[in-house]
Length: 180
Image 1 (cartoon, helix red, strand yellow):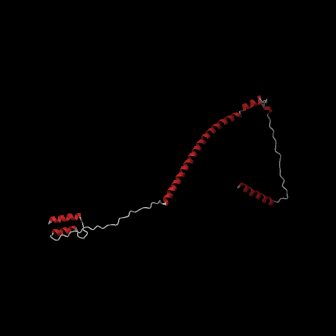
Image 2: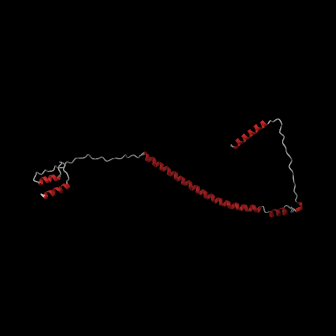
Image 3: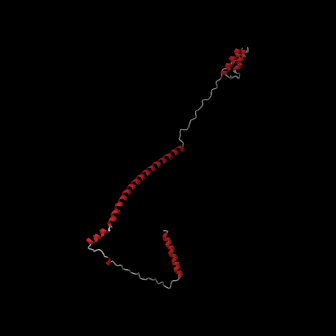
């Protein structure tokens, strides 16, 4: 009997329940106890309807198209920005080179300008080429001219109010000319 109980326990571990509601342990225990052995019913297979797999639409989302288009446009803008930065860098380098050459030319011209006004050369040219003679202390003189006095006479027919209005009109016209 102990052997039948052990077999029933092993059978119950493999087949925990039956479709007819009897557990495997009861069926085997009843048979071992001398009772009628209830044969298990064959398991009825219930056919399940075949599951349809979810199918996704083959279309592309308009938002993804819009996103890709935006990314493409922004990439083009970035490339154009790099091109313009490179062109500006090249132009700046050319201008720096031109600036250096102009600075050298300015130094050269400044030296020649300073040499052009050498008083020794000018005196030599005046004496030798033009036939002038150097001035002595007694030949140098100064002339002073006093400026003549100047006065304006206003006509007595103008009133001070008319002059004030003319002055204001001139002031306003000068302001308008300034802001043009």
